[in-house]
Amino acid sequence: MDDAFYRTRYRLVYLERVAYWYGRVGRGNLMEEFQISGVQASADLQRYLEMNPGALGYDLKRKRYLWSPGARPVLHEPDFEEAVGEFLDVGEGMGRVLRLKYPQRKVPDALRLGVFRAVANGQVLRVRYGSVNSGGVGERRLLPTGFGNDGFRWHVRAYCFRNADYRDFVLGRLEILETEEPRKGLDVPVDADWEAMTEVRMRLNPKLPGEVREILREDFSPDEDDVLRWPVRRALAFYAERYLKSLAHPLEKPTGKMVAWFVQDGAPTG
Image 1 (cartoon, rainbow, N blue to C red):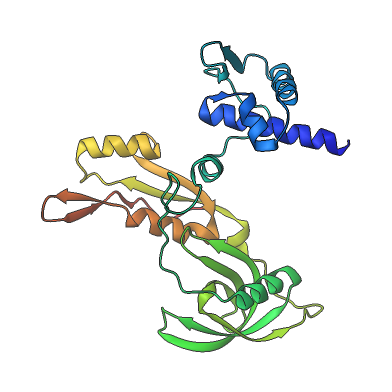
Image 2 (cartoon, rainbow, N blue to C red):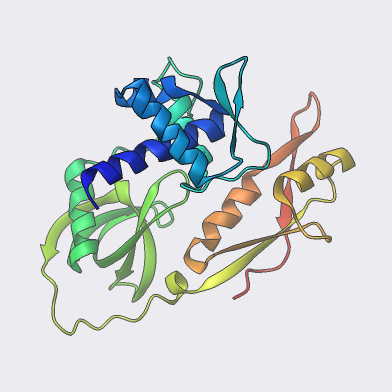
């Protein structure tokens, strides 16, 4: 396969994505994006029609192809986040997308790079770490094995030699003191929580007004008992529960009394 094949396929994927998300596409979309001729754009449209018959219908009035109701893409898997970022988020303060940036501790590039390399190369780190739970700062030896993100910040998953178990460490609270090269025969247990799946179960709060529960049923699709079942890796179960427990509804106005959307429905299983 030569470069021409890949260039053509790239244009066809773009064509399909524009048609799917905007509901319409024309020669001009391809000509402007790829600086190609009208003849080439027409050929691309014809090629796509052959690949996905019935997906596009030509509108004589608009002089554009319209995406047919019920048609499915054949060249890409629709991704809402990706589409919003590419087609609507053209720049902060200029596009049609606002993103809330949560306050985070700044993570120096050298720290991120050092931890990344330790994960990739199997290196042990001697670090200084500030723990909010213990309220202190101390030294530890860690074998970083992976990264996790709870939607707000990055954690590094690591075997802690001091505690003899796997724990999550907030990336911004680490300070690398020394990097040890991988040792042959370093014996650490398997991270069972990382490997295993579990199910976080939370029930819609019966104290919520009926109309609110009905809306949340549409949002979260719980089972017939109003229990939300969320399959996650066991290492992420804590963060999943914390997220659901943080959701609340103002039950009384204007007093501001809040009632949780979800309540505990037994411990995670798995």
